[in-house]
Image 1: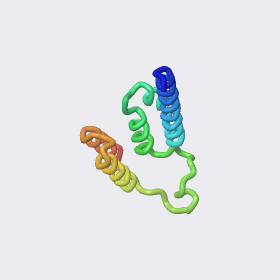
Image 2: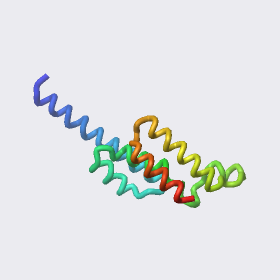
Image 3: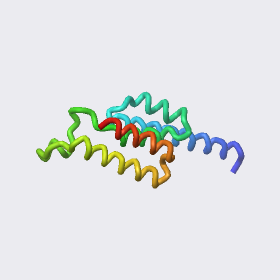
Length: 116
């Protein structure tokens, strides 16, 4: 292979990777009620932007009026304590998987507890 072809392939893969990351971030943001444009900015301008968008979209409560399994089954919505406990468990999983640091875990845990 010539150096020019290798460089061209590198550029194509870099562009495809960037487009994929932006599409993922926008989709996650849209599903969780976040601003897709902000998710795009975070993804493009931060080394861990896609991870941050993933974390934010999973810790965010679904927007009002979204149809979830609770509304379709007729069951009572979970209490604030149950929601907070589930969010903290999710947060623990992210910490265990190495997606977030201990400082980020402590900060988000405090925010969750303060929201009750």
